[in-house]
Image 1: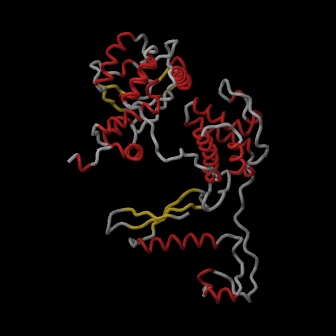
Image 2: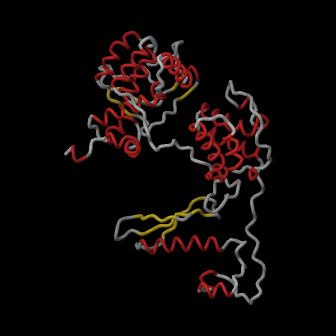
Image 3: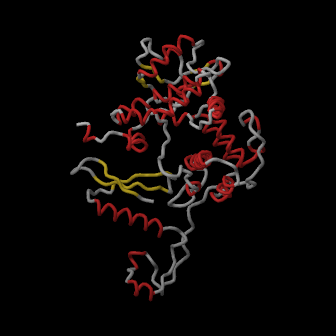
Length: 404
């Protein structure tokens, strides 16, 4: 679908067209050479119509004269042949790409993601693909350890046989959470996106080149509803974790510093300033497990303020801590994220609590917003964008007229 956008500053700027280019098989941009928004929209509309009318199956299609006259359609505007004129068959479309086998597509895709992803993330994507394509195309040696046996669901040989309907049926038949379904959708969408970028398959359609785009988004219902702990809840949570210092430290870092789970588990002792005034969030390396962190952060490196409650906790906690990891596993090593969450759930279930790492981060954000922190400062401290802060926590930010 074509869209327009303005580039430059008035009066010297002009409107541009953004549209999918079927020849180059990628989105493209063109200057419309006008500063008039109405004219720009008209040009974009005409380009869309021209694309539709240029399709081979529409060339040479005759519109009965009575319809043309009744609707007052000019033949030049629709490029329709005269009803009494005999036309040659429409020219053959440009040569189509050869059909791509699933096995070849997977080889290309695995090579692509292996070059730009951490091995742990690659293993996760392989595991999801394996559930659909089965162990023949994705054997155990490619799957992460502990992966349950997979049954081949899709039995087709070519990529063009895999439709959104098949993937949707596959997801609906599995016992998956809404969040997991969204992750599966992202992987299958990315799979087709890579094939399109490499020019290995034809676009599915003019408006939706990627066939997986028609899958449900699986976004959480109710918009950006957030769960956070109130003062009484924080006391309950701290009491429940008091007997497990490592989990308690993780909770404090997330609820009082706004760190993500991954950031907490990769935090070393030397990341905390000697005067306990701030801590540093950066990507780290774990030589023992041959892993490098891939922190999901808007700023690749950022300092985070240590507020008084966290400072008081760290003064006692660091004096008893052994080893370099701030939140060590029971064996003293860096904690695996899934194992950490499982341990947190076990401890919380004993106290009949259901809060998780994300709820702790929400708690930090809502409390700081209520204290009058600006969206800029909050976004910087949390390592995210101002847009995300506004979309999630706008209701908790003090109105600007009260801050003047």
